Image (cartoon, rainbow, N blue to C red):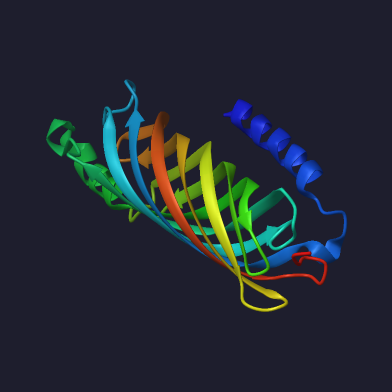
Length: 231
């Protein structure tokens, strides 16, 4: 996990150094909406649940900035930061294999939905651009934290996701200062989850690890500075 965060930090510094246009008037600022679909697995020989497969839908919105929406330059660096909602559904949850004292706890855990924050970084290379559009593709890194809502006061569930993949985006310029962005991508994420139960005869905290395949689509509205234009 720490290694992934270090890679993300180095990636961000290098991306800013290469993509920064050198003037604040060239940076685009706006907001985004995200939809994501995930297929994942939690693996743990220590957990009472064993290995768990799941599907998840992620919805989010937040703020975005981009160092190059319209300029006739090769690189751009895009960052989005915002809220995400995770609706997770487990496949074949092993309720029958659990002790009776854990069944209601497991039912609440299996039905919980997450609320959290997510930070996504993408470093784009221009493929095709003109006065009214820019098409780019490049690597991306994502870090997120979710806290799951449960109906049991004694149960706390938090997970962390981190990883990377690739994104492709299309910027369409709707005026001298407005850009509409559509982007999508695939990322492979590490998942670390901590759940703590204090009650019902149990007082324990467990950590499970896993992975997730995530596909996302973003719709973004940017306001461009006066320096961000095709010349």
